[in-house]
Length: 78
Image 1 (cartoon, one colour):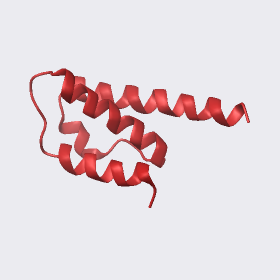
Image 2 (cartoon, one colour):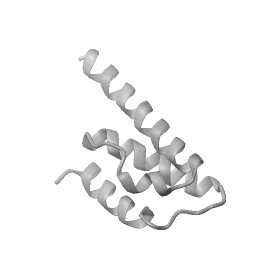
Image 3 (cartoon, helix red, strand yellow):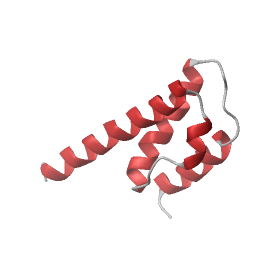
Image 4 (cartoon, helix red, strand yellow):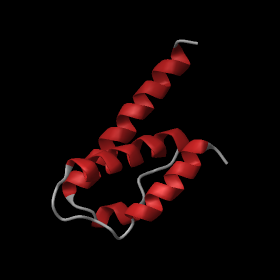
């Protein structure tokens, strides 16, 4: 199992059902990191994330998108 997959599992377990209604920088960073780990693991945004606040979903989507873009760039430059 890769480090990204290990981290993804741990972070998903920590976040599922623990959605903070109020925005905080720490929570936004956690969801952004979730998106990055999803991209590295080749995963899609999990269904449970739809129950999260809009800002949390956006942070995960932005993190995933940025990481996927960076991964594509690094593959092209080889």
